[in-house]
Image (cartoon, rainbow, N blue to C red; front, side, top):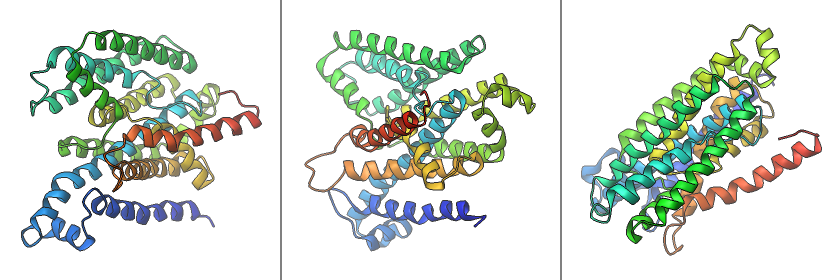
Length: 341
């Protein structure tokens, strides 16, 4: 059937709605679905406890998970296209490490124990992570003008990540215990976010990116086939690569600032989307990848807040358990085809 891929994309929407409903109902305190609906549409006539749980905690967490998951997934798809490497992810450029270094400086050195309980600390952490991501991104885009091989830029991003992590370890060895504990908690990743407007902005940016990628799908397909082929099609390769790096870094940087360094969603979502669609056409894969990222993020958050777990499981631990098998399968498939990754 010609339109079968479109039907497959549409089929993901009910799954997203089911997971969203579960996200709003399941947790340490179970909220019946009628109460969830009442809290959303008529809070004045609904149990005040249900309204508080749904509107103040679970709905912002759901919005953040949907936006951040889609953003990381699209960032991963862009990276795999630019670098032509199935194991490229949104953090290979060092954007996550740059955000982590800025947060380490803010939390471990500047904030101190006195600011540990400050209500402004979360907002200042967002600002620090955004500045760190943006600074790293500008550096990478500037360097990319002088590097012709995408693989060399990939290695440069990894080296920057190692250097940033080394500085973080040095700072952490001299930090106070409470500040160090807060930084470690940030690295676990979390969709708990009181800054809903920040998440809505990320969601709007992600939707716009998905639409543009779908419209420009043929250009992305050409880039995936190689520099020479794309050049023969009249595509300005260098300019397109820099623009894609800028968009990918912005998506990953904002998501990292909002949720901490969430791993594996960016790497695995494009592969799951391609396997689900059984095609790699960017015009349809882009939207599917974004939806897949949102689904994975909500599923990971649901597992991290399972009732009876005795606390909250770090989101990064859940995404790693989901992502590692996918990466192993990609390696096995690449090896069986004689592909170097």
